[in-house]
Image (cartoon, rainbow, N blue to C red; front, side):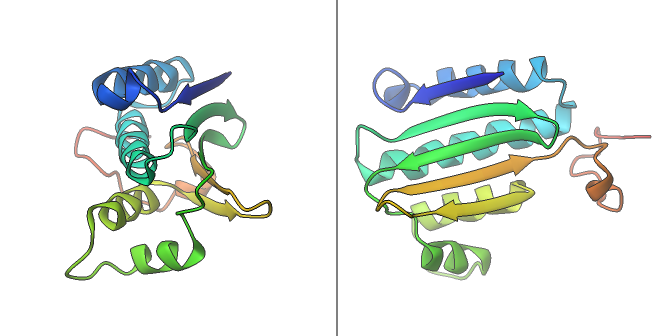
Length: 148
């Protein structure tokens, strides 16, 4: 399944609607409750990151495949850079709102890749299902998230 979400009004002005769409998508794709919550929070923070760029053409897309559920952020202003990602991976005092948003997104996602080949930034983020073998040794994020 594929779901493009343009971050223009009304979603730009109503992030609750965005969170509901992401929640519905993740639930349909069979993610457990804890990974649905991770995806909803990651999408919310990613949307804030893109909205902060001020570009009306920024988009967030979701899709699901055998690897998990992916978020694709398209930033035509190319405000998302390798340097910003590196800075966000090492939280520190004095972080800006957008750096905090990127830090949350990077923490929640299992796979992060950035493509800036044509001048725009395309950030690909993937959340694996909780039963994915790569997450076997990772403790549950929430007490309610118990996996066999």
